[in-house]
Length: 340
Image: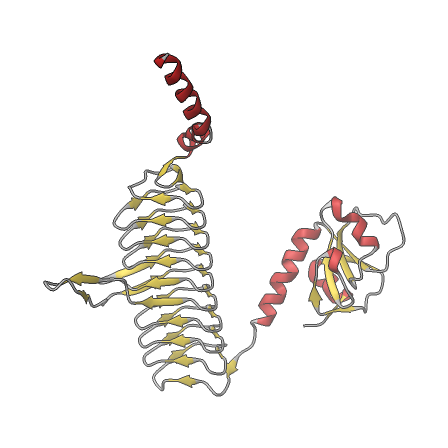
């Protein structure tokens, strides 16, 4: 998308100082700015770069007064950082405004869909699928049979939504996500071999959920794996069968949650956390990165370590952990003195 300085100023309610017809088609850091790029200045430590940047347009706050000659066109706004974010949001919205069914793609004859659908080349939509208004399905995405998808959902390239899954409104499913894969269910038989347990449930994702690239969410053995409204999942997360994640919980990359665990509302879970199955984690829990959770947690607990301790207990204990070699040496010296 190409925008002029005057168009950007109109979107942001800003004031142009410089060439109002200069155009940009990309964004860049202020220190890496080049012709055709838009950048911004909000942190004073980056001020020296505004005099050397090659960016065509720079967003600055209204109080900014140049002390040297500058080549970039300025757009003065109330808050440069917020305005830059607003412009990025505008760009993303415009980019996703495309509609229509492109070829080659496949859509079963009994699919029901609302207005402003976009179906990209090589996408597949199976039988008895229901799509809401404003759904965008990008190349190589797969939508299995009997799936229901709400309004304004974006399913990016290569994502898979397997049969019987339910997705609410205003969700974003990033590339490589797999929703509704079989849960990890096997039972040993008399010969010591493992027999697969059929996974007959589904996945339910409520409104305003964002699921990062290459995250997998398994279908339940029976019933549903449920991701409640407002949940934000980072990349490469594994969510086992029958898990329930409460409203507005956020989980960082490479976390694994074993089957049938229930996680409460507004929890914050760091990267590479491992959570065992069949436990309950309360509301407003904080779990630090690389922690291992093997027991139920009450509302508001803060955990760290593997196996995880209370956050304050871990910090107190760590003082002694790092001094263990020194303490061991002192104990050995005391033993020698006692022997003498």
